[in-house]
Amino acid sequence: MIYIIQYCLNESLQDCSFEQGSYLKWTVNELLDRLRENPEVTPLIIIKDFRNQMEEYSKVSPLTASIFCTAKELTEWIINLLVA
Image 1 (cartoon, rainbow, N blue to C red):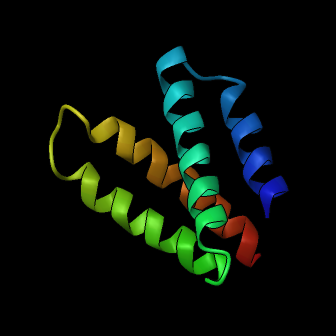
Image 2 (image 1 turned 90 degrees about the vertical axis):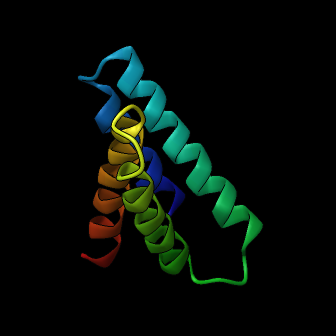
Image 3 (image 1 turned 180 degrees about the horizontal axis):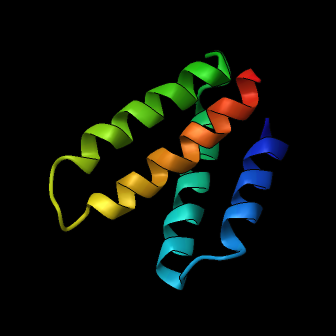
């Protein structure tokens, strides 16, 4: 699981701006924190919940939408790799 998350981060960081890279790193750190804090919950459930939360946050304000859209997109990629 952690390897998949790290792989997605490394691949995403190759061709992105500093700002986008910061959002990606925040996403990974947040996901890993949530997984560590909830070892009794199935990881896929935690990751899907995070994705859903990021989708909701992306609709709150146009000023912060890109942060949460980036987080949602990376999380969806991780989910797709996990269920493949």
